[in-house]
Image (tube, rainbow, N blue to C red; front, top):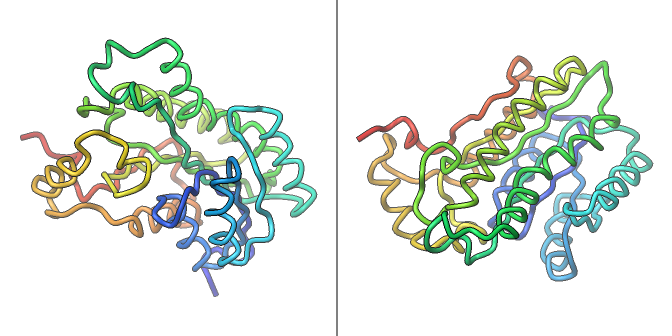
Length: 257
């Protein structure tokens, strides 16, 4: 028997087979979870649909998380499809490339709004529509993905670091709101991994080497390890854990000098 046999949930944020969201999906599927997926636009659909179908997914829908109507529609369809869900994986973030270059002080107002909306507010928007589908008796689990740039200044992370800080604060406030419904909300602060989004950060290859040299485990974290941590947070093994930001970064975040 799998750890998640009989459990159902939806995953937001798969872009390709290198996505951390995809690693989470694989880990959850391996333990028996039934998964639903969303994508944004035709280009991503061509990547996401074959991946989702390879895990037996029968619910694969378009959803632009910047539009509340689309989020509401996806969960309405999901309710008709399954009736209820047990978990949500939120792995969504975006900032304009020009706002990840130069200095944070030069961030445009529109760039700030975009980064905060997509990278932080969408967790709250998704939670709002997910909660009614989570059974009050069994509760549920919501997991999002963050990064150390929420806590400390990371070169070229700029407005995304501010957005991730807002995301982590949202995790705590959502956990406080939803605890009485037995819904747990947590974040994984993953170390740098070669994903499509990460490769857009200037100096990312140098970042990988820097972290590997200084982390206690003397290497970078692997995407599969992030997936296994998501499995832990979704499963009953973490039944007493909520409002936490768990670092999965080979120990890099504990180091001072």
